[in-house]
Length: 220
Image (tube, rainbow, N blue to C red; front, side, top):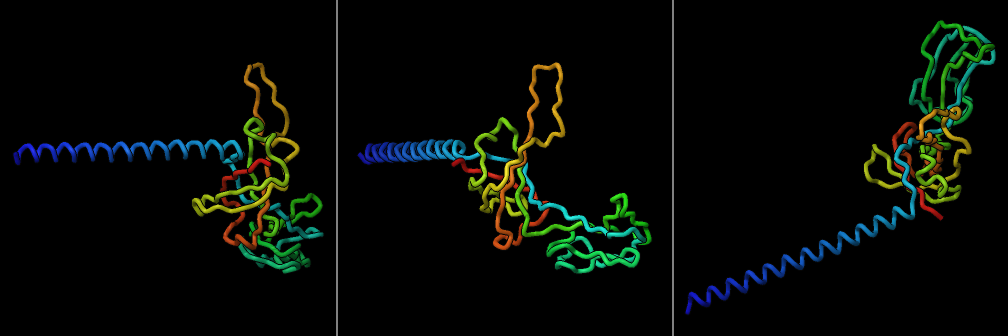
């Protein structure tokens, strides 16, 4: 009797275990389907741009008159204010045009800077308030669905999965290619267009010029 009782209990335990496994499997399947559906829904509502970078327009600082580069007062990465001296060329002091950040400097002290030929850039800076995320989007990967005013989120490689918010404020009217290229193959060329997403640099001070990013633009 005891042996039969143990066998019965073993069978019941086995059935209970099987039911638990089946229940867990069913839950996982449902969650998987729900997750897949959510992914498809989000994908359908957004345009993903993988190749993106944070940057601002470059501002070249040059003397009005030609002369020898006598001194440089800043280095790359320095924060400057408008009219702050950055270099001396001849008897002329070259100053920052606006508040911002120095991104490159000419360190060739004693070199002649020829302002007449436009080859007298002694430093380059950016206005950090003009930082934007610039994405390169293939014309056949959702470009037609992106418009100025669309909300966007983006991540920055340096900060992992942390999400930032912005808004599309420009879509380049021309492709990044300098001109059309024609060949005899059946493969049509695919051009890339720049999509600009503006954000609040004061809200995200950790974001720097040149950082790699990824963008999701949400269709309206």
